[in-house]
Amino acid sequence: MIVTSLGYGYISKFFFREIAYHGARCYGISDNTKYNKKSDLENILILPRSMTIECIKKSTHLVITAPPEKNKCPILSKYEKTIKDSNIRAIIYVSSTGVYGNHKGKWVNENSVIKGNNNLANKNRIKAEKSWTAFCKKNSLTLNILRLGGIYGPGRPNLSKDIFKNIIIKKDHFFSRIHVLDISRIIASILFDSKESYCWNLVDDLPATRKSFMERIIKLKKVKNYSFRDYEKFKKNISQSKKKFWEANKKVSNKKIKKKLRYTFLFPTFFTGLKYIIKNL
Image (cartoon, rainbow, N blue to C red; front, side):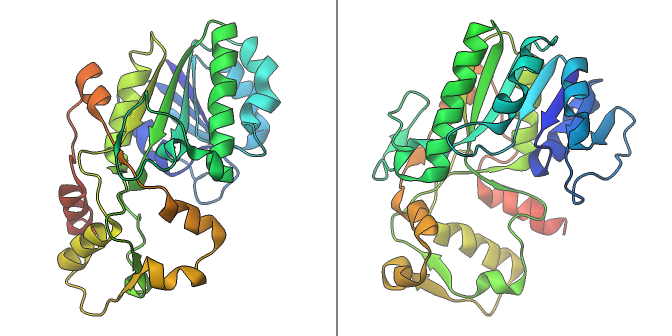
């Protein structure tokens, strides 16, 4: 298996190591100096964007983590013909649970109504998902769309003192999260068994409020100086784009991942995930 990650970054850095240990050849495309450092594993190569076409031609699998823009996926727009004429057999497109939009705190699954069009970023993701679906169907390629919740892991969130000042919270506003190591293992599982096309929610077992998440960090780090700010009283100081986040309230189900992939989470909730991160700081 030869895998190219287009938009190589935080997620790819982790799942590359997961699949490289199982013998996969990995090419990461990035001009970001934060991520384009040489790997200590010989079957992982991080290359500049100028090598994109060459890497696609060499690969059997693509993982698209590059964000969409202007109602489209820039990767598909630029490299559609290259991918079509290559030996690519399967594609993973990384999207977001943001595409579901606001469900007023109710549970959503992969078949739920998509309501994320009131947010430009999510609107672009929805269109990108549709474009990849149409392309892969037309060219008989396997496509797995991964809708990720909030990602946390080593370095995320940044646990500097500043994040504990004016922590914005909203009562009964739920958000779903997932540890990056679980993302890595799930992507590896899908890559090694990518014979059918599916859409998957990648989230843990416990949708929770931001207050619950931050209180767990505060307790584990024994933070003394922190402050919470109620969203309703503070929203006039929040940008319009960030308000969209607070307007979308839902609990995202991971039942499909656990049942169909028979996946067991390393960190079923952020309670165990955050404890592991902070213990290993």
